[in-house]
Length: 336
Ligand SMILES: Cc1cc2nc3c(=O)[nH]c(=O)nc-3n(C[C@H](O)[C@H](O)[C@H](O)COP(=O)(O)O)c2cc1C
Image 1 (cartoon, rainbow, N blue to C red):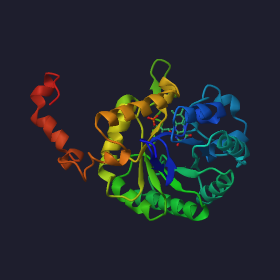
Image 2 (image 1 turned 180 degrees about the vertical axis):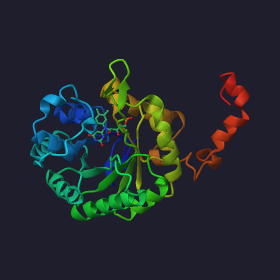
Image 3 (image 1 turned 45 degrees about the horizontal axis):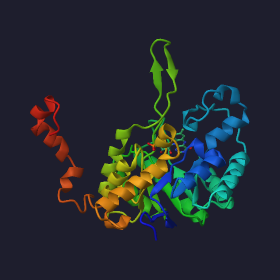
Image 4 (image 1 turned 60 degrees about the vertical axis):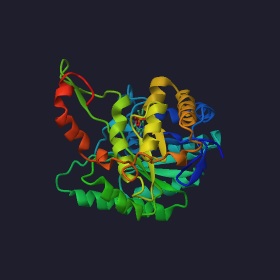
């Protein structure tokens, strides 16, 4: 067992650094590079049901310039016709054969029955697990939060029942009480939760007075919300806590593990710093562990979680109150 051994959806892996779903995974050469750089597992880019519909009505030309961006950025026409996912499944089969480390598929479907249908088709490719990408923007003011959540719980349950491979769920932070929702999710039989997705936000160019679609890469400080929830969940949930968003280097990875994450997913940093960044992150974690005399991840995982820290208020509002109490220092640009 190596120093960085961990588990991903119950599968043994050699590093807690997981490549999150993204377009780089479409190229088998990139997958081989990710494996060589020491990734523990890879999540293949999502099958977006809406994208399949788009492809069917041949909107490729309109998609020019969107290459390598989120499929989520693309608006679909209400008249789209349903088409098959064969192309995606072919890519997925090739990807699975390209590497030995676990390859996880990712799915974002539209209808309850298609979530299950696609999940079964994906499982047939031989992938090691399935991530459900619960990425939805509620457009209707008639649907209550409880209804949205109940539907997601039902989908997770149905997919878990329909496949043998381990299933995880990737969430946005936009829930009134995320901890309660994750608690409900645990009874569906999923193995882990990925916190969080990076939602695409539209922007406006005020010179040209039109909408623009900016790149959706995270910044180095975006890990903090994830850190809070990893810290709150550690010891509270039997689900694997998979941290995602703003984890750009080894330092952030160590922070998330200390807070309570089992593993971390990385995407933006691979676009910014190259695939080789994975090995830098592994080296950093090992170096930090040696300096602190830890011989495996279990020894320090969750050490600074709400359950274990000497100051559990840190995960509540303590910092905010501290900032108010130290506002003089803040005005002078000093850390309180
Ligand atoms: C170019 C690109 C493509 C992405 N494609 C997907 C995708 O297919 N499915 C998905 O669930 N997330 C997708 N994401 C989101 C990432 O998996 C990840 O959740 C998000 O970027 C936050 O992690 P990061 O800060 O490490 O980038 C994509 C992100 C980027 C930048």
